[in-house]
Length: 132
Image (cartoon, rainbow, N blue to C red; front, side, top):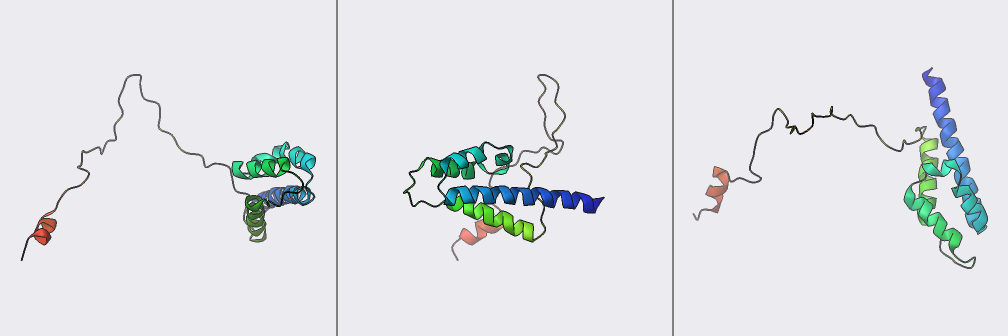
């Protein structure tokens, strides 16, 4: 069962890599229509916002522009290295456990709540400042 789940994740990552290769071909050909079409696919949600913005900027730039999509190429390289290393596709966000909601108007405090000063002097600090 675990092997099957791992294969499914690697297929997902390999699908993302194929998608990234399609984008790379479109960027190298300076095919702005193809870049924007690829960014409309659901798979583009796996790309970080900075990468999508950079690709849109490249798509809108003139064909004579010499600007390279450096962030995209770095992302593509990282994903390729993860795939070669057998890593699963990174998830978008880690689920956090939340506290139960408190009653209306109630103030919640930790049970080990204690007031401490932000900085305090110790006896050792006082001795080191004294003149010999």
